[in-house]
Image (cartoon, rainbow, N blue to C red; front, side, top):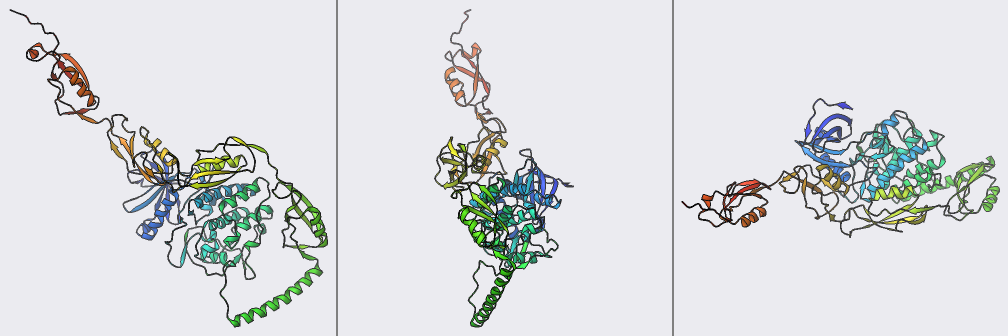
Length: 637
């Protein structure tokens, strides 16, 4: 962290103090929020990009995408704006280091620790995907590790709503970091949350193997390998990687999105199963390889980690249909098929004589049947691992090696056998009123699963992404693994602005941000006879107004008591004068009038007042009155 020579103040509020990092689009500074007296991270777009409307729009979308996401594993965005042609984003200042720095320091996390870190990232991505945002630039540099073990994802620099149809990258190019591209992203095709799953799979691969699967002399070369290359098993670079974890990585890296985990939540669930010693649901390695024309990656110089535009790669991929070929091509293909068939027969005869066979598919069969099948194929039964599973007790749920793999005659096959559902009693907690992310954490800690059901018709005073109800209700008796249905207010549903009157600006900001609202950098002021100077009087929009998540709220603070106009109470009775002053928010002090002023007026009449009628005085001021006494003594000469 480098101290800055010029501690500039942006928007009369954010004063930069130290340079933290240089990114592909912006500089990141440590700054002091002078209004709320707290440190923040200030991301400032490069000056040469501020004049480019395309980059400015991408920068604006980053702020909007991130500001609408409130999750423990996502770095929150507080504000964004422009100062004299310079665009900036204000974020939480995270006290930690990036995963990229950790990996560059040759400090490779353990497999279990890697799975735990990536599971937290998957939780953040799953939340973003449910809110219609795809990150599109998942990489170690955008993953922050805090000292307490918490992980935060940052830099939604090229994120955009899934429903968006406009494209900000130049035609024929795609934005991102080539090392962590998904195949469909490299081809410039439409992406969804499964693209982030692939990128996160690359991150996990690098954590385990000590290098990414594809390296090259240029981003274009790396991008091409994502489309055309095959993924080498990470165990080729680190033979201590657990097989289950390797299977998880390879399923995340399937070329076709339909063969990967279908959501970040599925990816996270398998990682948690691995860390808890439960059987994983990864299908194995086959989906990550790419046919006979696959190109094997070789060790080359790393292309770097900068987010940039890379030319779109042309296919083909196995998940995209090829065009119908002409007759000549068909003839050639037929000849090739015949030759391949001849080769296959020769290979079969050679492997049969050499003692190599294919692992049969025995999942779902009982152990006795599987033992006989293995014996018939010249294989032997190895160790049997009993695991908890919803499958029928005594049936095989996985084999090592997996079905379809080449095995040697006499090789020992290890089986994972179901011992049925094994769960323990647990108390289902009451999570109504909590945010979805907090509810998820509490349920997961108790070994419970959950399914969110979003509604757009909220009850009064509800907040988006907050649990409105749950089934079963809590606290109640349940068992680990049980699924809890949570009814959650949709992020797009309207809700009421909370009242923050009487709170400090910092307290009001916290209250509004917790309700998925943003606080405007500009504030208004108004006098108040009930709220002390400096505290919040009201908001714009006002409390109880209907808004949606992400709406910017302006705070109106008290400038002190209001000025009031002094009424004319001379010649009124004492009671009438006091009533008028009280109605104006003024107090009165009464003293006897000079008898000479009372010769021609009835007793109890006000004859003088200390403040001139029509003048302005502070609310609750005291006006002195002189009043004729009810009995006047006259001395006769």
